Image (cartoon, rainbow, N blue to C red; front, side, top):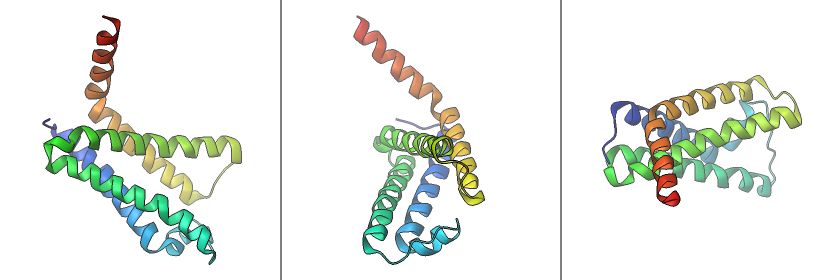
Length: 141
């Protein structure tokens, strides 16, 4: 599968962001969360619960970036980028409704995630919608 320039840019931004954030949390969770005004403490269980999804986010970032270099990885990369950058802001929006207003740093993260989600939707819209409509036509037949 060949990627358009916009798709490559979207995967590059999404992948670098996911890899960078996941890697930072994995390597220095205290410093990362302190930037949001969150104190993690020293409980090994809490730190494990923070590092595990961080490793997943970093791995998904690598998958997103792999799609730029390897054509065969492109569909998986597009799926990973779309899932991560639609799910993260969705979760934050649920938190806003259920838990109230978070810190300014968290709101900044929400804005960044929404911007990357919009970029992914703009870049991948023809693939996301054409795949769904093709699948619907095959099931209806």
